[in-house]
Length: 171
Image (cartoon, rainbow, N blue to C red; front, side):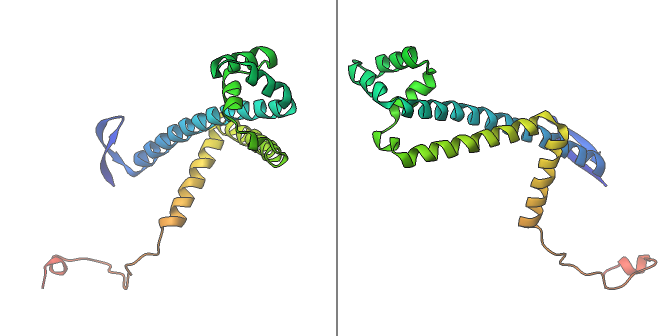
């Protein structure tokens, strides 16, 4: 089987093995980029959640600092200096509504913190090993197969041992 396909932006005639190898290489790149992106987002969110949990423990002092500040910028800077929050954490604290500081929300934040830590570990594990990347690719291909695969629609009724020219001519 020979097929014409684009490989790195250039047309190339490839056999089935080369097509599959090119597909796997492409999927490796996709899974790696996606995992790096998700890891970055999870780490950023982890930083914010850790800051919010730290802020809840010292909420009275934080509210006092925010009240004393003349604007949001100054409040953020004061929070960064006094409590050693990052800029992202300070911004998240300033954007948080007071209703989110209830004990129910604290439990949600702690649960989210644990989930983020687990997700970060999984993503680091995927990025650390080619075998993990290949297992993700395998899982995704099986998901696609389950979602879109269907039974063969044509049937092979009898086996023809030899085809003559007469068999190929339309009747």
